[in-house]
Image (tube, rainbow, N blue to C red):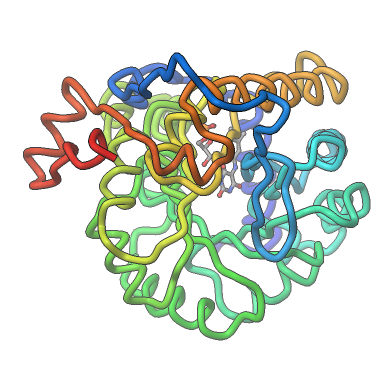
Length: 356
Ligand SMILES: Cc1cc2nc3c(=O)[nH]c(=O)nc-3n(C[C@H](O)[C@H](O)[C@H](O)COP(=O)(O)O)c2cc1C
């Protein structure tokens, strides 16, 4: 029988491996944003300095619609990484999520590697993170640990199947999500971690009482490739599995359901962020790319990079004739190529997006 401390040791090793291998398989799949176009407007009628990137989210104001998405916590190295990420989020006014907190729910000595984030960013938007299989009590304790503004519940079926120690039984997930969504006092966001949410999944989650999703599409960090590598198996078999980010986003955003969407998955540039917002995302999540900047350039480098993203997003808004994020969302977006073929095959007409 596997004891709780052996289980936590395995978690600890896995978290270290994820930090080491996070760019493994990056690029194996496209995020499909290269098939999405915004329409240039040559005669904007306003001053660049009047473009407002700020958004209200979870009762607070963000300077720009970005979230440094869930990555780490639990190991000594992750304490420093979380400190840098939290300080950068505080200085740039963007949101941040911590990595999965199960390790600290089982071993309280790891709590500091997560709670550092709230200490470094007392007024910011910070999200807790546990598995979608978590109980209401675990969800409650994760939120309390960092005084979180919301809770992410992650869905990672592919990763679980590829881990020898991973879950095989997913039959209780929907019930657990329902309990947490209805029982918790802060908003719940269900997130995929790189394989995307289909429209069917969005409808099912809506039925569980969830109103906020992070589509976590394919084209960026690829846990299938990471876990295959950890297990010494062929990484190509599963690494193209899933919905590319732009396609997942359109599937969910055009579902007609009143869902608030975060778009994550291989978003590596402010142009891709602008496209995601125009397609209907309220927030853009970036994990692997910001981790790379953090590890290579530290806090100052990450702050400078996020400030650059803001500046470029402001330019893209102006070039689309949008004074704010809502106007960017209301403008035309053209979907071409294989992304368009996918949507048409699924009975989703992308034409209305182009005629807005
Ligand atoms: C090193 C690393 C660790 C991660 N750990 C978690 C986690 O604990 N919980 C979670 O919900 N997502 C986790 N993710 C997934 C990210 O939040 C995100 O959904 C995914 O990486 C896709 O975004 P990206 O392509 O910008 O990296 C992790 C990502 C990375 C790179």
